[in-house]
Structures are given as C-alpha cells and as structure tokens.
Length: 170
Image (cartoon, rainbow, N blue to C red; front, side):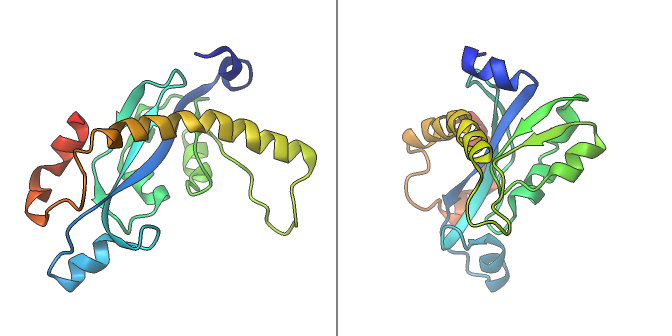
C-alpha cells in the first residue's frame, strides 16, 4: 500500500467506481429505455470496478443496463458479501451506500456533499481533496481497460450475449 495512502486510509479494503460502454441502440423501446444512460446521453452498459489501495484490480462486476444507479449496481454486484467487519469502501458521491455498509459493520469514505452551504469549510475541502487524490487510482485502472479499445465504438447489439466474459477478460 502506498505510504500516503496507508497513513490515513489503512482500513480501506476497496476503491470502487463505475464505467459505461456505449451499445448499439436496441430496436425494442423497452430495451432502449433500460439501457439509456442520461449521464452519457446514449444507450450503454454499466459495470463497476473495485481496486485495492495498491492499484490492483480486485473486483469486476457484471455489466448491467446503463440506466442502473451506482448504488443499485453496487448492491447487485454482491461485493458486500466479500467485505469483512470494519472494512472501508472508498467511492465517489454517486455511491449512496452508507446505510447498506453500516448493516454489515463497514464504512463508506467519500467526498462530502455541500448540502445547504455555499462552500466547504477548510477542513472539509482538504479532506475532499485527499479522497479525490486517492480515488484517481481507480480512474487510472478504468482507463487501462479502455485504452485497449476492445469496446471502441458502440458494442453491436448481437454481441451482448457474451459481453460479460469479454469485459472480465479485458
């Protein structure tokens, strides 16, 4: 574990983030609606990557329809089954999973929300920067997956039957 990480995040078990891959627009309106991602403004499949603090990919979820929320994807991925009491999961603001983790005696570490304030106080701002600096590691892991361009351009709809195997191998 990197020294800077160990000093303040020694209980961190996994850093998670989601990524989306565009797919060919389905013919069925129901399937179009399920796969449409408002974030990407196109039809997508969405997966979650978990890395250890060292940067090693330790968890890959199956791909789900692009309309799924980060929270729902986290729960469906069954990553919580692999966590032990007192583990810390680091994530971004989209993962509103604090209550689910508390049920299994784990904690969520993520940047704070502004809520009703105009700006963060100094200590909250510093803490958010520290979390963001560590979370960039998971962004790099995701970029390594995308750099190989296995998923360059929209994934053909006819290829979706084995897409989880391709995503896992990549």
